[in-house]
Image (cartoon, rainbow, N blue to C red; front, side, top):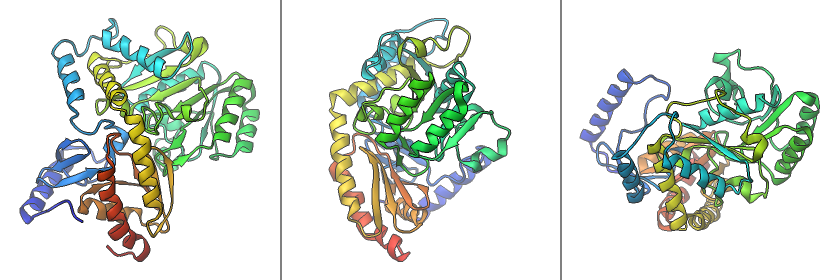
Length: 409
């Protein structure tokens, strides 16, 4: 079923808006799929009034969906009093958010939080923390940690790295879930090892989970060698997997955790959580900073996001709706597996048809993402209902399946 109704006038307006975009905005993201005008819950409308079920959520950002009343009210209230004060001063929202994150993370005494504006910035800070310990960082093949020079140095995809070489040295990449390769890399680094960084579930490479055994090995090896275990939870954190943080599903506590995306519910904010006295003291006065980091407006948005997740029982909703999607989509012809946890799901396809499926989906009124040729990624709002999920399941079982199995819409 199609949720959109494009008319000729609408298509012409969309083309004009796209032309304006291309003449005014740098071409780093390519041609936009649509020009969006507003959103409500899990739905968005484009400039021509066509409606779409948003199953991408701003790439795991819009945790509460669009324009959640409590989130809007919190931002408006904070904006009417104090938005930005610089880090020569403290604000109540900044302190309260740091305390809340430490509580949710079950961080021990001596733990501390650094606030940034994005996941990339959080990972830059984590990289600097590892350099305080040692010169070598071990990262995973398929990992993505951002596009600034330090974060990009830990990102594996060569197409992203090559135009900006030379990057920072002494970053070693090892295969996903290969414990032997990790042990060998740790041994090679020796006393120079500063940290191991990984995502509990790799998002940009196609929703690839790290196994429990691998996480256990990474934790044991870093402890043994006095290095940091850094978990990039930019995409998996803040209830996305059905737990507050994905590492809690494994009973493993890192030394450093980075957050962003869903933390602000749509408002830019990043955070570094350092666990314990040692990690909490690695960055001292003057070692790092951010003009906008921890500003009162962003912190108010994040606090509202956490409050709604807790008050509305969204951890349970994530688990229930995620399992419903997983079970139903696994039965769709042409789907070979459904990976991930909660509402971070990768639909593995029997053919490299993800781009075609995603293009047909947006024409039918569904926003999804093809991170790899044979994978569709779903990271919708944590408020997504079963009834809304069923609309996409129905489409996948029909037109989506035909594109995968027959190559026709």
